[in-house]
Image 1 (cartoon, rainbow, N blue to C red):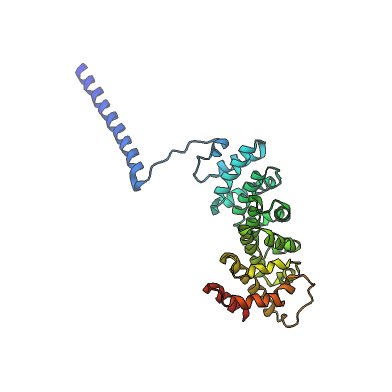
Image 2: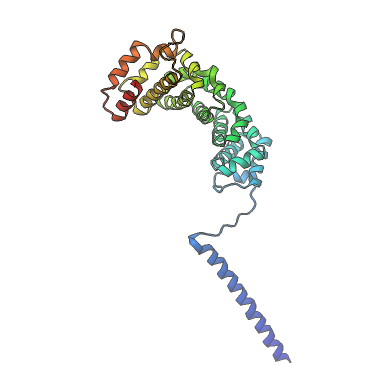
Length: 306
């Protein structure tokens, strides 16, 4: 009897050992299959998610933790890290929806009024990624006027100014919200002519969006613009700036031609963009650019003159 019992225990031990080996095999096989490693994702606290070492896409629960953290903490370092994490994840279309549905846009948007410039920049960057979604733009548009004010009155060529310009550019890809910028166009041209190369490029991207909409043509041409704007049409100007300036002129001319208004020359005041673009000095610069060394520039000039 005792011998039979011993045999039974040995058999049971062998079965358990075989089961353990099989589980270990399945685990290691799962890790190696397709060259991918199986990841265990334990629950992370909201502050863990802002550590900078977390690079996975957030799930809804984690997004909710971060949003709560943004609302509840006053630690500027934590706020900034949370905004960076949310902003990075907002680059994915699925997360743009999740953040909106969890009420995240007003929480992020409230941070653009923070006196800390780094926090303001990170909030603008997060809103910029969120604004790629058209439905998100409906909620983000309430911040457009504030962003315009910050772009115009803030430090020239600053990270905050560039972040604001990028957000405004995304918000004006379609015609839906362009009219909200009407009263800021003159100021945007001032930023254009006084800013450095990076700022010039970003303002031109924004103005190009507006220039493609015939409904914005009068507001653009009516804007008071310093004569130094025409220096953007000089032959030595970097190509990325020169081509955009020429495209701006081309778009406006096309919009006027489509409405057959160019010949009637509507009354725009002295010092307006209209008086610059259709004045003698601009015509001379365009004539000189016909001989530009770059083929793209020459092609753009010839097309603009048609």
